[in-house]
Image: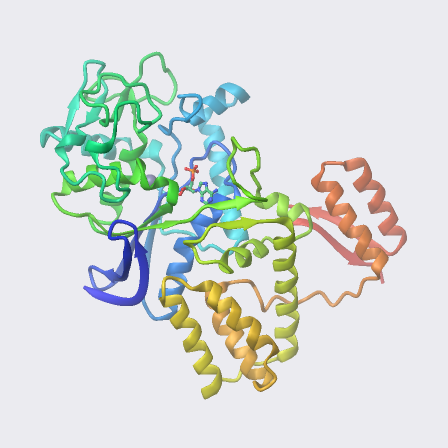
Length: 463
Ligand code: AMP
Ligand code: ZN
């Protein structure tokens, strides 16, 4: 086992502890992935960035990692509809549920790339891991941690797992009947806090599979146990997810995995705080969901989102605003143009000292916000040479990944041209295509050609 210099807040231990690599070679990370019935909103993306930040930080210090992230394309019941989220969307749109899932899965990968998140080693899909889940459920039945109910669903026996509640603090004796553990009907549970590992199909005809207990579909929590045990060989050094997953998702996952393995499977549970947007938690039901595509449509660099996230510790809530995103966008542009002016990097004792200081901040519970403060100081520090400043920025770029060496377009626009371009980006985002076409013509008359691409509007000056 290797103890790395990175300290993270372990939700179960409720304290900072060093990240350890159990096999002395590869850090094994599991991060809960998206439910692909809709686009990932930027709050989801903040949580998905956590693994990238950890991996890049440790990679900088010479450690290697493997990351597994599941794709939930079946079995995640919605809170309000008590229905599978994918089937609910399919009923609404009349599109095949698997078609919906593949479409949004593709968009999830594109969004991650747009904010500089490198891909995981594997993205197992729940719908393709049915046998793996059924095998695990069989094991849990055989070891009497699970039972088949009269309704042919299989339930986990919560009382068979003595340390239930260690992650969230929700111990079984304090969980009253009626508490919302899960978005399912009670079915044939023996105890109110038991949960379904396998649900019998009932009237459901789509997304159902044969099983030793009859036709049905898996519960949500079992997929993360099955996949993490399978793809990480039964040992998870770090398990990541958003703070809302502490309970019941991670509590139930821990009970399932530990009961099957007969030991503590996950060394550290780490949770990212939520993202608020203009003051409220971002969620579909609150109606304040923001997508990467909307940021691009406003003419902002999607990496401004990455910088806005990095300017806060993963454990603090962020209240994202359009002003904040615009500020991050102009910071990135300024850094790109400064880096181009500063030219080649020069490593000196002074620059190395500042880099070590930045790395120390990151090792201390991912203090990316502190690094951002250092970078802002370095930017203006005339006692450092341009080469030294360039060196510090380029080293931190390996973790911040803001594409700072991107060549800036050497295009000088007049105020009027800039104003019209911004107005057109707004019109496009408001889907006011008539206005956006009008603005395109006005820009053309001023010698600017505009073209729309997947990453937003692009322009060229006619010579
Ligand atoms: P879902 O696709 O809903 O299963 O969520 C995927 C991930 O995003 C989970 O780890 C959630 O905890 C996380 N998440 C959901 N809402 C937010 C939010 N507003 N801010 C940050 N993370 C979130
Ligand atoms: Zn999960």
